[in-house]
Structures are given as structure tokens and as C-alpha cells.
Image (cartoon, rainbow, N blue to C red; front, top):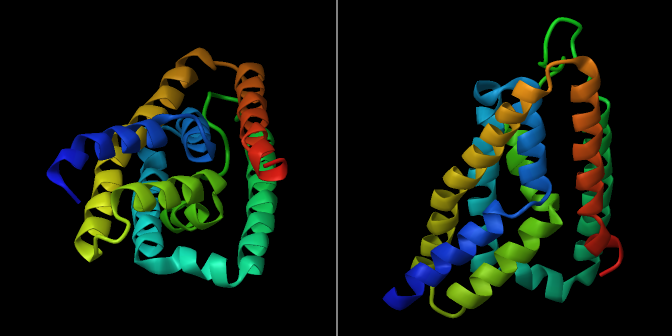
Length: 198
């Protein structure tokens, strides 16, 4: 990768990771329901899981989809089912009687890292990033692109989780937190529209 591509890569990574999508909506909901500290494993799973995904796509994983299109169909179906389940989990999170923190637990590191592999936005970003910034340039460039996204994910995951923590200051009773959770679930479901109707 040419040195003059560094700023465009970082801007692309910032725009892609900071824009609303399944990861960020779930991080915001987790921050509001469980607090920043309990959301840290989720945040780390998003950043490291997505960077690993970019690395995989960059070294040729996308060729699997070209050779066996049914794999992409199965992955799309898994994405749809998993996002529906996550939306239900967010919408049905039970606010406690004595405060704004929900019962249950946020996504673990492995769950968040694994989610990247069924996240349609992550696949689109990984494919675009490696095609534009690392195509045909070798392992070093794939590592640079993966590293750029890992670095920028710190800003993104921290911001969205903190936004959720801030929202919790307003969500001081069970009804407000319940309404927030339902709104986050509806927004998460809205991210499925491009998956269902490409």
C-alpha cells in the first residue's frame, strides 16, 4: 500500500466503524443496560474479531464465496437468524426493579468476535477495504488494513458504548429502559433490510 493511501484508509475505517450498524447498536444497548466496564469484553471482541475477519478476507477467504456460492447463502441465513435472536434478546432484556441496569449479561468476547462472521455490514466493509486498500499488494498491506481497523475500532466501540452509558442516565426507570431496548431492537432489525432486499 502506498503511503498516500494511509489517510484515506483511516477515514474509510472511521466512517465504516463509527456509522450505525449491528455492532454499534448492540454496543450502545449494552452500555445502557450493563455499563461500560461490563461491556469491555464485547468491545474487544468487536475490534479484534473484525480485524481478524479483514485479515481472513485479505488473504483469500472471499474466494471461497466465488467458488462455492452456497457458503455465502448459508452465511446470509445464519446472519438473519442470529440478528433476529439478538434483536429479541435486546428487546426482552429485563430491567431490574431497583435501578437502570438490566439483568443478564452482555455479549462475551468470543460471542462478539464470532458475531463478526455473520454480520452483513462487517462482510461488506471487509471486502471493500481489502479490495480498495490491499488487493494484489501482499500480506504486509493486509496486515496494515487489519491494523488500521483495529486502531479505529477503539474509537468506535468506546464512543458507542459510552453513548449507551450516557443514555442510561436518562433511562432512570424501567419503562424508559424498556422503551430504549425496544427501540434498539427495532433499529437492529432495520439493519436487516439490505440483507433481505439487496
